[in-house]
Image (cartoon, rainbow, N blue to C red; front, side):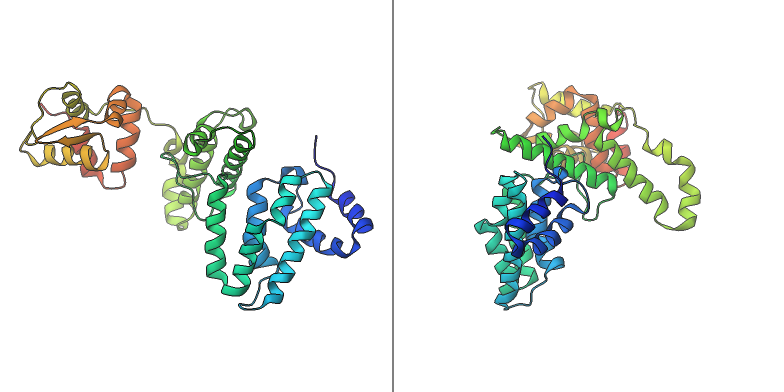
Length: 315
């Protein structure tokens, strides 16, 4: 069942609580941005109450109790509107002790303290999608990334409300990587990567755009995982249970490879004077695509030479 129309709710609030109607109108316009009320998520409500309201709708002056009172009144007005719409869980957030405390922190201690309190409270809700190996969320998101972030947050919220034991990282990864019918079979992760690539191509002036734009589609196309024989051989020896001396090979390239596998990938570990494979290393050894993804994410940021060391076949 969809949420009632905002206009109808405001009319009802005007009749029952005329003193709250104007503040509720202001709050709900900021909250929804003109979108239907049923599209609002817990993340939307949290960000409005704990960030947008104190900093954009009614920015307080440090030490001014009146600013806190005005913000709390506006939050209560929104809560009453949401309650009329049957959105009781969101309505309760508007008058919760957490909301009151955060708004008073902004008013009494200033923006920095208020923002810190907001960030801590938001993390505690469990609906904030975490960074995952495939994607670190940007501070400034494009439309596709914002859509992905909202979708992942809504999935987390639904799981929490359903009483499930939620692994936030696993759920976020699944929601990002699975093909979705509403995206025409595409995945959110593919959409975000495409958006970031497009911004990279277009965002550094006409010279880069002219050079890179003809190759944008090819750059965005998935790369077939390639064998990494040197790393595969190192992990295979470690997994065999045979002795693996720390001084496996004296060459600088072999030493760099061992250091990468141990310290940066966490695929092998030291056991006394030996090296042994870790559980993560076993997963990499069993999956060519997992090994390729792990190594390319790590090494492409470090430089071409290190990548060649890992990929080169050693006789």
